[in-house]
Length: 375
Ligand SMILES: Cc1cc2nc3c(=O)[nH]c(=O)nc-3n(C[C@H](O)[C@H](O)[C@H](O)COP(=O)(O)OP(=O)(O)OC[C@H]3O[C@@H](n4cnc5c(N)ncnc54)[C@H](O)[C@@H]3O)c2cc1C
Image 1: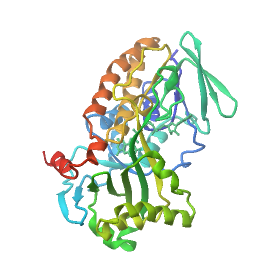
Image 2 (image 1 turned 90 degrees about the horizontal axis):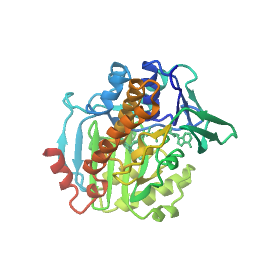
Image 3 (image 1 turned 180 degrees about the horizontal axis):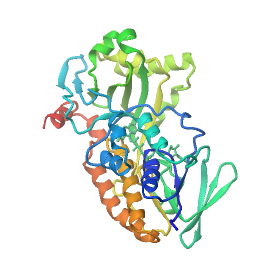
Image 4 (image 1 turned 120 degrees about the vertical axis):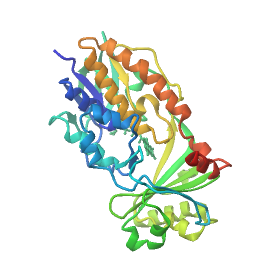
């Protein structure tokens, strides 16, 4: 009989693992803290890379379905100066290796590919303890608990499973993002819409930047990036009442008052309440000694500042772990050792060699970025 796999977290990594296990006829249960798939907007575009994320979707038997989600033209890249002048314009000719898909639609594709009941929503893990012999007890906020044969922490940055393996705690990188949307931009924000390309548009300066994605429909997704101490944001009310939103957007846009007004409008004219995302990371070479019956994947294992790899690595880890479990029937330790042996150097290399957010917002920006794209 197959080992039953218990997965904590229904993000892209945990769901890919569950799907690849299902493809191999191995049962799993995914426990997710959120009450339903719709509980939180899964917004944002992800470029899914041909050397990791797309390979995982092939292993999951979902590559054709993934291709149907691709938003045409979104691999275009534009870099603007703070005056609004175009410094770099790379059109999307449809042949690029990293097509963009909406994160929420990709997650839904994975959810729909699992047998009914695989994901148990509203199960927030509060603690995990070893029972010996590779077994663990997972406790939930509602007072219930389950015992596991093989436990996988796919529960993201603040993993509750990680302490079983490692004492590492994510540290603030010094950079925070603030997210907002300009809805129906071509009609409601035509000046801003004209500035940005069909894919990703970046305006960068030392210590701050704005990244805009054109999403499905005609909305623009603005990510403000600010190098600021964590407590700089504490004085801003990010609650979603109209008056708090207006004043938070004005406060954040004020950081760009020396930019052309049509660029500042990409922030100030946000139609949705701004959401702060304080960026944390684990040490680049985070690893642990083998502990029987448990492992981690995705951000739980190797959280980095956004560098375009995180979601792709989570998909890839999920697929690789699923295949390792399938390749070692009845040998949990063999499967976990094989998976970790490849995963540690893979994720360390991605963290060390990937785009460095602090460098992207460093003194040489945006010319450092332009060189990166043109070389
Ligand atoms: C601002 C920003 C932009 C990014 N942009 C990109 C990008 O363009 N490309 C890219 O590849 N990556 C990007 N990333 C990184 C990417 O989002 C992550 O690396 C990826 O989501 C990791 O997937 P995961 O499945 O490991 O974890 P997550 O997506 O975090 O999923 C973890 C799941 O576990 C659940 N969970 C958490 N705690 C518990 C608990 N106690 N009990 C039960 N369930 C729990 C959560 O609700 C969640 O559903 C970005 C990250 C940020 C912050």
